[in-house]
Image (cartoon, rainbow, N blue to C red; front, side, top):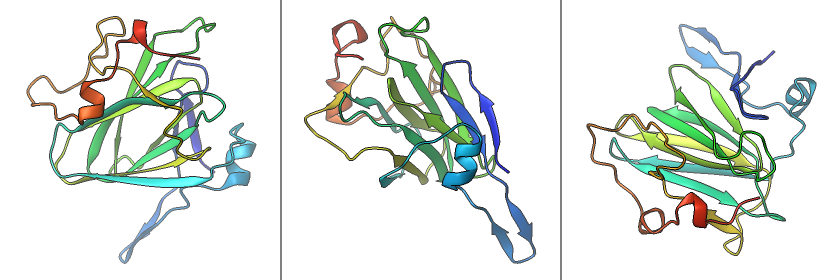
Length: 183
């Protein structure tokens, strides 16, 4: 049975799969649709993505897709460690503009579920970090959007003060929260 912990924003969850180990290594079932549904997570995922970051301080985000191509994301770390963030961008929500962060690592063996209506991003805390995530809709460039990672209105406390943050051109040019399209 997976362990599911609410993270304080509606639908954002930490999920910890069981892990069985012996002298040979380990086995873990990281996703089982029936088991997730029993825990109230009835999402059908259609695409798996993976990213590799060679250096500590690589920041990816904040990203989301607009309806009708919005995506739920189930994120986990295969190697290394990240600080993962979800920001509520649902205009009618009582937590609109609030964020939650969680450290994910291969050691902790935890995952984060980021539902539709949330912007998502992460920063690597170790070199050679590999992140895998499932999404509930296919990538759509026409619906792809972003928000600046350092927007003072959101005020994310990224644990990167001593690191030089490395961003893509797309993330450097992302609009501030007040200027971005949201749900």
